[in-house]
Image (cartoon, rainbow, N blue to C red):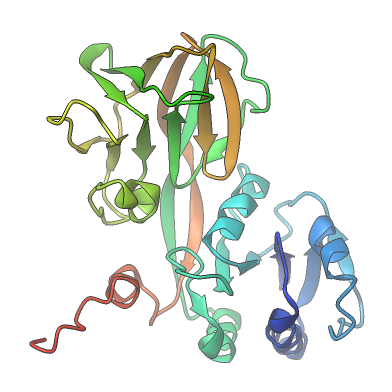
Length: 293
């Protein structure tokens, strides 16, 4: 088995976790490959016990069996761009805070790695979004995808923006707001949730439109079928507005038309028996803590 390791930041208190992971993978006779920037990031940490044969990668290919991220949900989202059109599944060890996506807790690392090496897991296929525009967008490649959400928001102003929204060539409404989130079911527990959006099961064939601080009080989150293409025209007092795809943020010229739709690709996430979506919801949102339950 060949496993890719990825991280975007690292703290000294995480060294025992990484050492334990390396030891477990070596015991399972796994080829351990570090992403090049992550490997450089780890160099100052002298307490790390490196594997005997260190392998480095800059791009993934189909020879990898799995990617493991070390960090929080943001780290896993940054790792998605390396998966591109590959069928390589991904799982995250949560050394961050909430951990809706990076579902392996530190205290269950040993058991989780044992289950992964023994193939005791399910593959959850998560839909992703892709974007196109009437004008080229600097900073975004044509193959850029978003696992959680694509968001348009105001830039360099305290004034609202107007987001004219069209679904499959049929006008929906114009949101006067700080922005608009187009979220996948996976992203329904992220930014969209904090802005009042609904939680949607990962297997649902839906997208969520969630306005950010809308001024028209009748504006509410809307769940739509994921086969619809969402067209956005943004008007602002400034010459630019912001577009974010998960952790990637770029500036876009006002009046640029955006088209957002479900991609033909998907991201394969490993789901361990004790870390499914419903147990994660109960744990992270403290459901069931009411003594009456």
